[in-house]
Amino acid sequence: GGVALYLGGHLLFEHRMHRTLNVARLATIGVLLAAVPIAVVLPPTAGLAGLVAVMTALIVVENTRRVRNGREDQASNRH
Picture 1 (cartoon, one colour):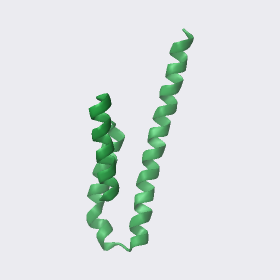
Picture 2: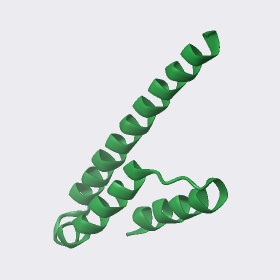
Picture 3: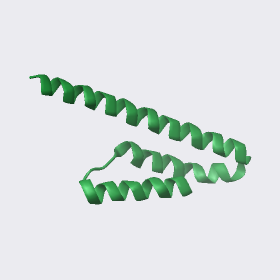
Picture 4: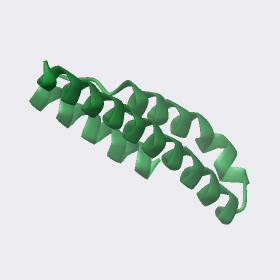
């Protein structure tokens, strides 16, 4: 629950300061909260592996989006 709480706090901060909503982080929070009942019965190493997998997926999605947006910004600056 701690990582979901951190992501939620960061999401609220971004919304308050920049009026943006990061849908990927919101979905990740939902996945993490839905996985809590499962993680409780798993061995700690398995729960941690699941957390790492979910966070790795979030990082891939955010970096892919950032690269795409960067290319779009560079293309618009050329014209």
